[in-house]
Amino acid sequence: MLRNHFETEHNLFRDAFRSFLDKEVVPHQEEWEDAGVVDRSVWRKAGEMGFLLPWAEEEYGGTGLKDFRYEQIMCEELAAINEPGFMIPLHSALCGPYIAEYGNAEQKARWLPGIIRGESILAVAMTEPSAGSDLAGMRTTAVDKGDHFVLNGSKVFISNGLLADLVIVAAKTDPNNKHAMGLFVVERGMEGFERGRNLKKLGMKSQDTAELFFNNVKVPKENLLGDAKGGFFYLMNMLAQERLTNACGAVAGAEAALNATVDYVKERKAFDRPVAHFQNTRFKLAEMRTQIDVAQVFTDRCVMDHNQKKLTPEVAAEAKLFTTELLCKVVDEGVQLHGGWGYMWEYPICKMYANARIQRIFAGTSEIMKEIISRGMKL
Ligand SMILES: Cc1cc2nc3c(=O)[nH]c(=O)nc-3n(C[C@H](O)[C@H](O)[C@H](O)COP(=O)(O)OP(=O)(O)OC[C@H]3O[C@@H](n4cnc5c(N)ncnc54)[C@H](O)[C@@H]3O)c2cc1C
Image (cartoon, rainbow, N blue to C red):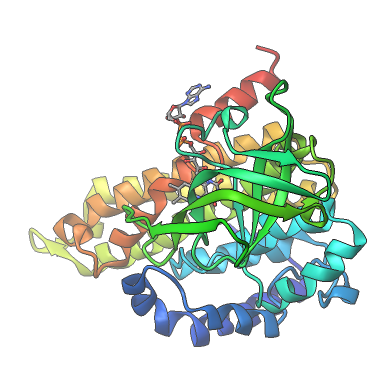
């Protein structure tokens, strides 16, 4: 189905981003997968090309493109090449906005230029070993000591956990109020800030996911974003954009999985005919085609609503729920239609299957999405 919300400048941006990926990412994907982390240099290259935080103001080195369609294009192109480790969306559309939105002028001037140049890689640390969906249950604390806070606790499953130079850490600031938390920018090298091992995962092999430890880390007051008790609200506020990002990548991932499967079933023969000729195959692929088209229209509409600041957390949750469930269904059917070859790592559908599974879990599980949506229905 033809999409109608992109203009010429978006198409040009997509061409430029795709060429960048072809040159700087695709040739390194296997090497990064083996290393469990992408090479730092690719972040700088992306920065040089203007692909990091393109929405940021020119005074910090951005291009002022406040149009989520550019973020959508990057999510789509990364999904199309099935690159899970080079998480521009995490850096640009999830973490960067915390600094732009809740940082003061001094903080923005201090951090944004390096972030935009790809010299300071970002991560956000909310999840803890005993608290994921229930963020208010986190145990990391930040105690006010006058000119600084002292941070204690640990975080787990942090994307960019090893590469990150600046980590936005959520920590409790009032023992009598479980929703009182602050967002603290913890910098590489701060005393008491340690990183654990690169966690071994089902998929997303090129992405460094790590545990982080904070033992009496002295964080200067200048590194607190916004209000020391407002962090919970800030997180909730930003999660809608994060979920839209997931949706953009999930539909594109489903499209890529469908294309890989269509190519395969046309070539593969069984019982003297291409697998594509079996009615079961055609019907399965037709169902996927239909569902992806429907999901794409909905996602594109969410992007345009978001551009007008009209996307509600409930609709963002619907987008994440629907598209990530669809992605997982499509990759599963895709593997099935590949037969045994679909289970082999050398086939793209196998990696797509492994990479997709987390989409229904991170940035809020499907069950949490249903909670948000049903709350909006006053149930
Ligand atoms: C690869 C990877 C990358 C990640 N990156 C980051 C990151 O960069 N930063 C970060 O902070 N976190 C990150 N996470 C963490 C992720 O967001 C959490 O894993 C996720 O939010 C779920 O939390 P949990 O794992 O504690 O599961 P739990 O909250 O323990 O959930 C377990 C099960 O209980 C269900 N459940 C929980 N509450 C309810 C409820 N109220 N109603 C119904 N069912 C419920 C869940 O849906 C789930 O099925 C990442 C995780 C992974 C695996």
